[in-house]
Image (cartoon, rainbow, N blue to C red; front, side, top):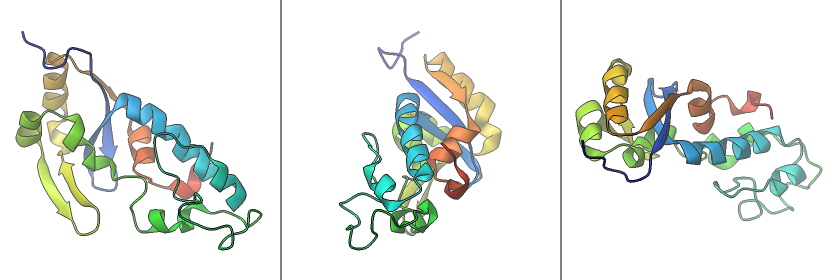
Amino acid sequence: MTTHHPNTRRLVYGHATNHDCLAFVDADTAAGEAPEIRALAAARTWGEARQVQMTHLSNPAGPECYEEDDYPDDEPFDITEVGAIVEGYWPEMVTARALDALPQDLQDRYGEVVLTVHNGEYLQVPLDGEAELVAELRERGYEVTRDDDLVNLLDGLRLGSVTA
């Protein structure tokens, strides 16, 4: 059996509620981004939000997006009112990540590329393909874990109710 990746690729997948299909994400990426999203969602003031350190994501409330004149540090912060989040640009659409995470032949066989008006392409992987696709990934040496909550957090679902 030939393996396509010398190092084990670790993927997290789950049911992405927004598109009602499966989403696949690199596990290390997911592990890095999730605490950053939670930290921003937990910020109570714009000052706190601006100071959230992000290494995996850009901070949509950060100084490069908003001046302190727009929102003083002590102004109450509501993540659901941040422009990039309202417009759906942050965090990146989770279903788009399968385009990088999955091998091309499996994308072709199990998914369909869908073009959205505002956010570009994503891979729609129907829920009923889960067992076969996961089995095939594991045969190829991928480590695959299902975590619906993590996938939906990465998609920005219900950000206003996320707690740290």
